Image (cartoon, rainbow, N blue to C red):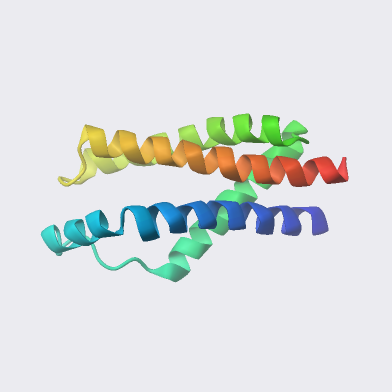
Length: 133
């Protein structure tokens, strides 16, 4: 249980940290423009739900890595990328199918960002697992 809790915390810090840099700093102006343009369907992000989503994503990686025997940063980065490619791919497909403000280039960008999340979170969790192996 301790391994899962600490692994989830480490993965959360990597995922949330990257998200804070990308969404909170690098693309904040673009997000503000989208919120203004689509004010009827986009609102200010709920930080509690963002934290919860990152915790769940980190736990998903911890859980799957435990089953797969991922115990190093390199395989963690690779498997994290593959898992998040699927997770973000399906969410982008559904969002593109439903929302008028989503287009192919926006969905592809978000998909790639999701893969980077997986690489960073997966590497962090894999590196943590290597200390326990």
